[in-house]
Amino acid sequence: MPNITRRDFLNHSALFAGGALLSRVAIAENASVTKPNIILCMTDDQGWGDTGYNGHPVLRTPNLDRMAEEGLRFERFYSGAPVCSPTRGSCVTGRHPYRYGIFFANEGHIKKEEVTLAEALKPLGYATGHFGKWHLGTLTTKIKEANRAMPGDTADYSPPWENGFDVCFSTEAKVPTYWKPGDYDSYGTHYWTGPEAMVPAEEVLGDDSTLIMNRALPFIQKAAQESTPFFAVIWFHACHLPVVSAPPYTDGYKEHADYYGCITAMDEQVGRLRSELKTLGIDGNTMLWFCSDNGPEGDDTAPGRTAGLRGRKRDLYEGGVRVPGLMVWPDRVKNPRTITMPCSTSDYFPTVMDVLGYTVPETESRPYDGVSLLPLIDGQMAERPRPIAFESAGCVSLMDNRYKIIRVAGGGYELYDIVEDPSEQHNIADEHPDIVATMQAALDAWRDSCKNSLKGEDY
Image 1: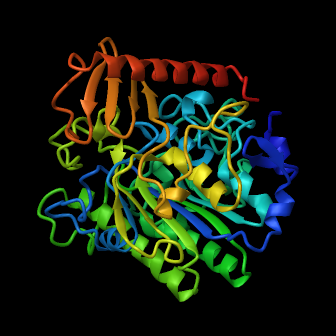
Image 2: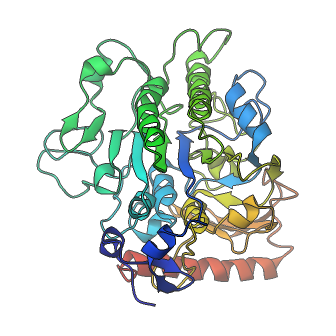
């Protein structure tokens, strides 16, 4: 199969289809192919236990709880990595970030050769928008900005508007979850809407999740009014440090009011989004996803919770990568249920393309690490067809439907039965050396594939 480059996508020439090239125009004009609206919502550092529906005793998340009741509630949903930038890369490419050099937070960028979901969807008639935290490259080359941007430095310049997004309200990195007067000018990280177009200070005040939704909703409203399918990426900063909040979101919280308050404020905006979709009459045909980018920050004394899972942010144990995961799509998901099959942020790309009639290749010239979840959505998939692999900061892991091997830096392989032991308390590697050997061989092959990708062999 010949390579497909970003140029192929932007020239509308072809798409993947079962390992062969297929005209995208022919499929785009096929009236039988549904074009749902697609929204990817994601929070920052929200732990597995940081929702009401997962049993938090204090935190108020009524809108997420309602999503869990009305759609698919993923019992084992995994971020692509235990830190934010790599996970974000997996969301928009369907590929592990070690394939294109985003190894950790504030490292690397989306390369021009990668094809993002926004770039794949635009030729199919989708309006595309990014709102909130980007963290996949710098947003300016003119001034010192956020964590990495410097005057004249183009090395990691890769803003959302050069990766397929038409409408943007984006920051390079973290910002306070609530803006007080004077914060915006002093903090050093700003919102940008396009090339060298910084949002002025007078437009940035108050709850940050509200500001993000204030920009996302007009984009959605315009697309609905024009009967245009849309792809919206809404990446909240909550609940990444610095966490700040205010009444009414902090009301009733006796401790950790800023942390809990910023999550409750974000939850309110998810409810506001769903309400607007209903008002516009497009909620039925909208596939709305929600997850976090990794586990909670800090140690066990920090307010973020894993609900008993081992590890936290930066760990490949469950607490670092198992995150809240939800999806509602009323026209397609009519029977709410809990999904126990492991799923990942890398699955977004192949799932969306499958919905539109395309199959991305599992191997060959451009390996994808995600799988299509469309059969699962339709109730026709019970087990994941191939494992989920992880690598971060010298640690590696591989997980199938039941077992997980993990090797922390400087250690040997551990084996856990995640179905029976989700808290990873019982290392059973010595009892099952055959399972360890088989999974290690698969993990080694995957790592070799990633190294080949990193050398540019996919391009």
